[in-house]
Length: 172
Length: 172
DNA sequence: TCATTAGTTCATAATTTACAGAACTAATTT
DNA sequence: AAATTAGTTCTGTAAATTATGAACTAATGA
Image (tube, rainbow over all chains, first blue to last red; front, side, top):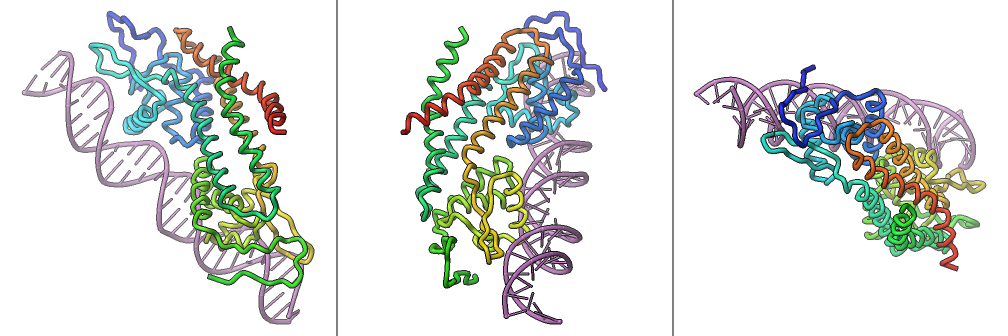
């Protein structure tokens, strides 16, 4: 364990009031969120980094803080951060006179995440439409059931913009 | 390659008109759907079995037909079918005087699949609510953004039943 | 000029997974 | 009683995944 807390004499923008110690609930939640995101196709370490940036009291963390908080090697940290940068899940800020990068969850992340889930459903729907085209069932009942699902997905996609508008109105 | 087409003299319920040969488009679609379902956490072979049962001209296929059509071993077939039975994605019928089981995609599968996607979002939302509870951010803007997402997910969940009703009405 | 910082890249080790093949079972048929 | 059918279960393994540690780079600081 290394002491990382430094007392810089001037501290303009970086919110260094909080230190990095995580409560047990925070650690627990990082793991649960991590497993959730593993199931969404993220590598374990990548998923934990997302979790840490999400539950940490500090919104922005440095490379070393992440590496130490999660007890993962520098290479794993490097790999995870670049992964998340490339996929647009995180971003970083810098401060003049400080070589470190401060990583945080991208603010647009939530809307994007939902957008992606919808696009995923849309892709599935495209596949299912092709299924109807290529298969040749004797009984029309099977196609009818599949058509129902496709139709509902299309309906949902159509209604989504107005749903968002309604939601925005509902919370003024 | 083995000849599997048998000409039973009486053929009451089983739709044996079609044989099992798959077109190139069908094979292609099995792979694409397979990859899609791999990304949803299914094992490759399991995902291919789902794909086959989806795109096949025959709605119901036997163990051996599946094994041969996909060129996977009996153990892989057994494992895949039991997996899919346990998770409720497929079911089977039997016919008296025939020891084979005829596997097909569960008819409720589409609604269930959508239901599951929604439950997944709901679980994520639960995690994010806990995130707000355990973390202690200086700047309220971060919590506000997360709250927006949570709020929209809750709204969507509330509206879902009425959306389904509206959709049903819209297609009479 | 030497040391330190903030990472990156590479080779490799440790797991994990996903399947094949063979041996097995339990029921049915010959 | 022997053979066949319709699978299941077990063992081994090839391949893929994931992370580590060490060596490296490029910039800054003493």
